[in-house]
Length: 69
Image 1 (cartoon, one colour):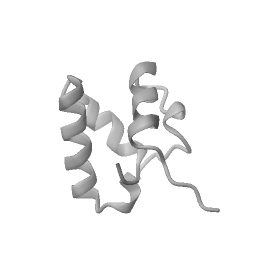
Image 2 (cartoon, one colour):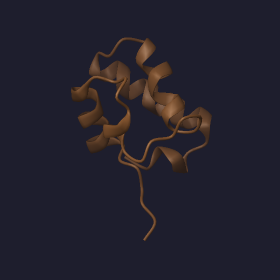
Image 3 (cartoon, helix red, strand yellow):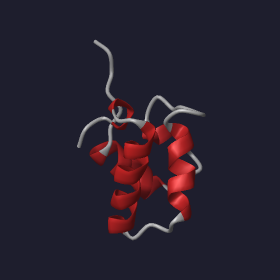
């Protein structure tokens, strides 16, 4: 997948929402994840402690944050 931060917010929300549904996550997870992209950003998904550890690990694999060189 591409870096979510490379997408416009609406497209990122759609892509992330579809991914969460496919994983069987509850609908409210999208509202927990999206603020971590722009309103309360984290350096890595591991820092989003309000999310369960298995979801944080899956986000790191599927949607890692790009890093500047």
